[in-house]
Amino acid sequence: MHELTFGGLTIAYDHQVLQPRPWTAAQSVWASELLDQSPSGPVLELCAGVGHIGLAAIQDSNRDLVMVDFNPVAEHFAQHNAVVNAMAKRVEFRLARMEQALADDERFSLIIADPPWVRTTETSRFPADPVPAIDGGDDGLELARICVDLINQHLADGGSALLQLGTTDQVRLIAQHAQQLGAGAVAIHETKIFDDGVIVHLAR
Image (cartoon, rainbow, N blue to C red; front, side, top):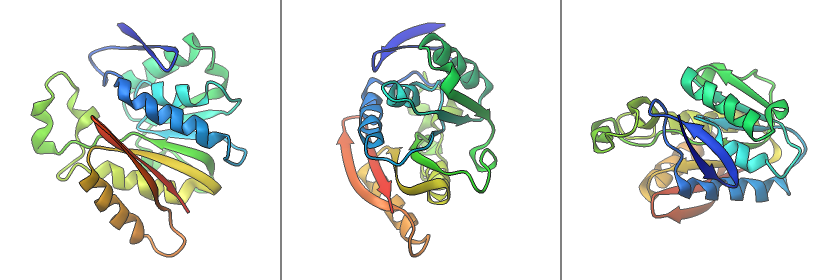
């Protein structure tokens, strides 16, 4: 087991899960800022991994957090990290495919999504990373599109979502996907570009 400091929290992980990237702390900071303006209600983290982004996002609030991931090793570390950082009472982990993890009527004031966004043919460029944690399908957006669909369905009125992607080209394709969801669907309102990835803010 390894440990690192992320957003002021102590986060544990090992080689079976994706090592937390320092740059993604920006997603936690942005999420925390959005929470100040968001309606009451819980936070949802899709593709949660070891839970570092969601935990850092809610640490200065009283919000509850629902984490979703299909990897039981991620579940183990996410729950451990919630305990170590004194947030276990506010965290629920759902071990499931995200399409199957939520009830139709569940709504969240903030949704954080961290899907893998590497093309299947390019995963070999990252030999230290577990393939399931980075493989985003043929164009890298297979799971990101599912995240947008779920955000559209489960985002509370007045809520916000933050989606992590790899490139600005992917942002353009995701914006097109959101447009295809019809009138009243979520759309990209702001994009922040970093050296190692991109974060987009979606809202209605």
